Image 1: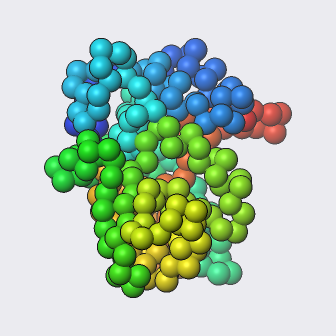
Image 2: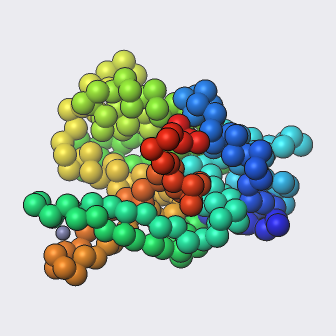
Length: 252
Ligand SMILES: [Zn+2]
């Protein structure tokens, strides 16, 4: 079964669910380490590009490395929904200290709110993926970029190398230029940002980006609590009903 999908940037194409052979992609540890699984999976399930949106693939096939994270994620959700249906069930722990009860939750992946790429963002992306903003405390202009598939591949390594400086490493990764700050001093500049400037930057990233909002509000009436959780992607996301048993699993 194939389906026409329009991603948040306007990229549109024909996409299908996974076949058995694509499960091998998910089970391939080497690919998982290289961060290439999503590219392989999307490459296999994307059948035809109908509208390239803001991308220039020339007369070649779609290059998932160029595609924005927001688009990739929406395509991935679609593959999942076409393969196993849109319902996704998972469990999270109650965040109440002293409770930690297991909360069972289920949602429809097609109901997640999705933000399109704005005209303004599309123009900035097309103009070399450069977004400008001014930090309120530092009073400096900075230029940053939206993350693409090629960037996504570098994230596992970045996380491993960042240690306890993950936030500043992530910020530095997205910043292309800081006004009157030399490239060699950029990392230090970012580590010295005020919390307000750092928060502002993260909000700016979100404001100009496109895609699905994966923050969920989960209620647990027994605890009179509501908590925000980030949609978890455990192994049941791509293999529902095939949860690992104690004898060992299919997915690493
Ligand atoms: Zn609780």
